[in-house]
Length: 189
Image (cartoon, rainbow, N blue to C red; front, side):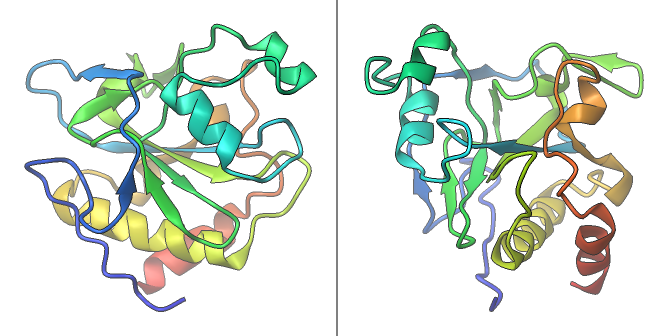
């Protein structure tokens, strides 16, 4: 994948040129809160299907719960993420990084509760049962490169999976996420 030159605008919290669908499922970060963590998630909706439409609808609060039986199990779910990377490495933004996305839920990292307060959430379309694509890894590396340019406290050690900050409650990005492969690519860029 050629470097897409994603550059975060720290004033708006957006990456110019990237589609932002602007989720209502976000709010202000606590005053003075520094971003120093990235949480990697995986999502498929319904489970095992890798299209973006239902994910977009979920994050935008307009999921038609009658369109699939699984959706009837999540009718009042209010979640979002800052970014989504699809299977082809395309990026969608839902929440400016200057705002708090609702991606981590009940969570803790290094003794700090409420990980949403100080993190950026990145969803990869995938599941616990499927490998991620090389295009997704490449896009993730470029996105984190852009985030680090604005938030240098995001070290490699502060890039974690949802399962790490919500153990026992969450499993994503799952056993098929190749952490060593990802971190090796991150060091090369």
